[in-house]
Image (cartoon, one colour):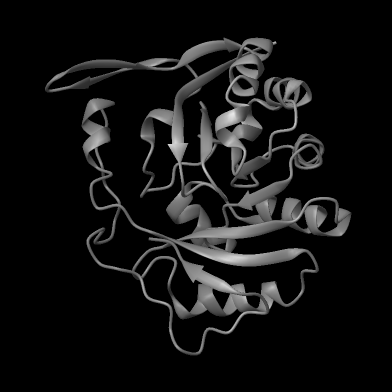
Length: 248
């Protein structure tokens, strides 16, 4: 079983508890206008061209090869583990499932938008210790405007994940001024949090004003449609049913 990665981040500290390795799988059905990893959107390998040189984004790995590499790092990851991110991991479910089956005692996190085939999503979620559910915009039409996909598929998979109750999860939402921090979106998030049994917390992620630099390297234009320098805010009335925090 083969898969395509566009990066492996060693020693990451923001993708879950403890010291971690983050594996970035290539391919994503979303086209978020603020995407920080445009090189992870397309499924095929692509060459990034920077003023100082070039880099290939997209390397083919065998499932056994990747699992052996991660298992070999176990001694360094005793307080942490491995996070599988993207792109969107649900684009390569067979490959990721084969890797997870070969891991030996490593704490694992699935970081996903929730957009994908429900059966594959639930199968992968059942094989990891925790899920980072990348909730963005709840309103289906507004989600389509900003991410290229309605939120209905992700919300359906979220409900299925919560009903199964096998794997705990948190929300991870980018905190974007006048995009995701609107009253409509945050009140909807409050209401949603009160209906879920296995949601543990809400993480807000800051915007990266430097994200646009990668687009030129990919031969694309960065057109977010909002001021990426403006900081999103959490209003004082925001009181969801679970703890929340803003990650730095």
